[in-house]
Length: 205
Length: 190
Image (spheres, rainbow over the protein chains, first blue to last red):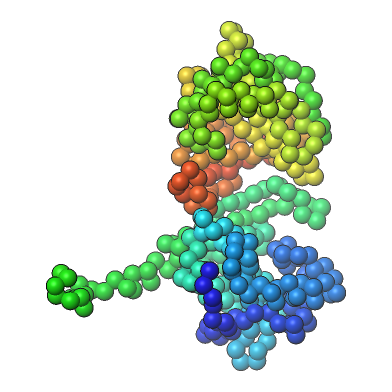
């Protein structure tokens, strides 16, 4: 897939690759039980965080299916790292991707994830030409559910007791959105009104 | 829990038993059909492919370890006619999960045979196999299939849209599931 200009800037945030010096900031949320669930590798203890950061630092391109792009969410003013988002390119022929997200609870509820994920979804559909994006969350995570709904993702699956997670029956939700469902009104910006159309040479009409 | 059922399993009208080599013609009768293969991963099977599939199935009669599948021929008790097949796959030992599947000869649709056979397999899964949850899936357009799941008391857990390609088009898929407690409650109320 084509290369990407990083960092990405939104109104209040900068999305940039994870850096070695992020260990402390990432550790603040990475080792929380609620976050454990959907990080790629378990980081139960503080000493695991550096290894997780090392893996995430390399997640900066989507060259082939299976690759992941992971970006730190950094607040513009004070450059504080408040969380992370990632996009995994899971399947090429069917154009499938998966979104993941975590936020430091100290900075949750301020709309940072909404803003970061909006930018990441734009990127997935417009730049990477993904056809369908999905995201998973714990069935009891009301914040995640609200976030998915606010972004316009549809609930596609609600699994009950389909697996054990840390000794307990699990409940998992899958949300998804297709490229044509994402901001449908913006998909027609190139469709100029008829009066403005004839930039074409007359002979071609 | 490992499952080694005593065959055959009998219901009111049906006999569920392991496949034998003599089943090739009957299986070809439905697995060779375009309309039967439409929602299956396999294309319509040739006679040789049917013979090979049956050869594999003759030993798929127990669940000993995770990933094992049990595939049984469904036969009418009345005249020994083979009308289809049902399967139970052991998906997870730790979380006691199983997947139910079936394929029936369209000539015998609409008489409740599939419901009868799959109910027997649910009883086996939640009974001797001690599963916690059994799920099944089908193409969203395959109405008879998901209607059967609803008759079995399964809940629709997932509706995936365009999550994969299937036979040259976008796939749309339903997942249905039933938990042990739900199965128990259903059996106690009938």
